[in-house]
Each structure stands twice: as structure tokens, then as C-alpha cells.
Amino acid sequence: MAEPTSIEVSTHALEEEQQVLFDLRPFLEKDHSIAAVEVNIQFDHSLKKAQKYKAYPFQAVFDHLVGQSSAAWLKTADPAKVLVTYNCVDGYHASMTLDKALSQPSYLAFTDLTSETELWTGKMAEKMPPFYLVWEDVPYEDDSFVWPYGLAELSLSPYEAAYQAIFPKVNLAGFHLFEHNCLKCHSLNKIGGVMGPEFNYPKNILSYWKAEDIWAFINNPQSFRYNSKMPAITHLSRTEFDEIVKYLRELAEMAR
Image 1 (cartoon, helix red, strand yellow):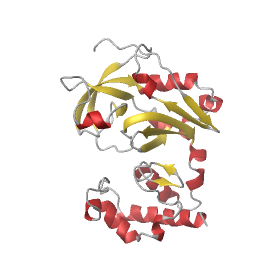
Image 2 (spheres, one colour; image 1 turned 180 degrees about the vertical axis):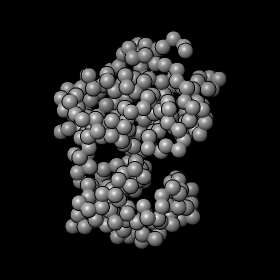
Image 3 (cartoon, one colour; image 1 turned 180 degrees about the horizontal axis):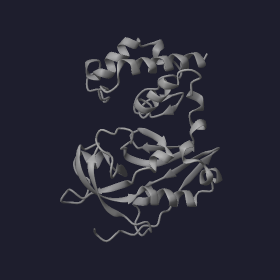
């Protein structure tokens, strides 16, 4: 392993009620104190191959950020009840509970060590900076961990408070399916990602799209829209999709 790069982090934390927002971009500055390491990733889920990166251990970064934060609730909260959201520069907002996020070794990668230049090259140079979150021991078949690139911020909030405006009274299964499969890119009541359109505010998507058309679209977006950026969602069963539809209908009723 190469000698670690020294880094001491300058943090920016924004607290609004119980939400804490950390800007990760200061980690790219020089003369800091958290050590960067070389890490070998056996199963890179985004690039579909083994990769080697220079990166900061996520646990060390997280501990430093929390240590500098004045949010007392975060220091004592049950990790299973804290939602961590990875905010990316392209509008992708991936979330998981904090206990899940800390359950496996992960890293904030900032340099590709498999290239001759030891920098991001080609399309990677456009997509990956400032950071790419990678996991050391997560196999390809496990899609429960997120791999966001263009990662710029961490947002932490109590799970129930974060989803209060979209939490169902009935269709819990549909909510969790939407959370896992859709909320990274699409928002509900302004909660979630902004890569794709909002699905409930000011109008619920089911008020202007038929469920059958949505099902056909997610299975083959290119058949509806030329050069669509949305990837085909082929792992979702029709039964699971129907649960999401039930949840979206409940959300529409809640808005009345």
C-alpha cells in the first residue's frame, strides 16, 4: 500500500430542525488530516469490473463530521432510525439507514488507480467527481447498497421525520418498494431525487399517466422517448409494481 495522503477536513454543516447537511467537497483540498488509502474493489457495481481507487474511508469521514457537528440528536440517535442521503451533483439522491451505511466498509473514492494517469479518464472524469462511494465486500447480486457517483453532500435526519410527508397509513409495502427503486431519482412531495420528474406534487402521476403505460415505460423507456436517460427497470415484478401503484394512489388521496 502506498503512503497515505494526509488530510484534515474543513466541514460545513447546515442544521434545519433535525436535518444535518455535510458538504464533502472540502475533503478534496490539500493539507488535511484524514488519511487517504488505496482500496481494491472486487465487484464495482457501476463499472462492472474489479477496480482500484485512492479513497477516504467513509467511517473515518463520518466520525469526523459528526464529531464537529453541534447536532446533539445525531450523536445519540439509534443508527437504525437515522436516514443518510447521498446527494449527487446530477440530482441523484440515494438513501439508506445509517446502520446499513456503516455495516460494510465503504470509501469515498476520488482517484482511479487502474488508469495510467491515476486520474478519472473519459466519461468517468465527467461523472465521478467529487466522490464515488464504493463498497469493499458487496457482491454483484446484492443491490441493497447504493453506489452513487458525483457525490457532493451527506444529509442526515431522523428516518420518520424525513419521510413524514410521504409515509403511508396503509400501503407500507408499496412505500418501501418506491423508496428502494424510485426515490433516488424521483421525488414525492419534493422529497427524493431530482433526476426525473416529481410524482405527486402538484399532481399525482396517476392523474395523467395510466398505470399500464407506466409499466410499459419503465420496462423500455426508449420505446416511449428517444434518448431517454432512464434505464430499463427489469428486476421489478408486476406484483411489486402494482404495490407501488397502490401506494401512489394512497398518496394522491392523502393530498386531498
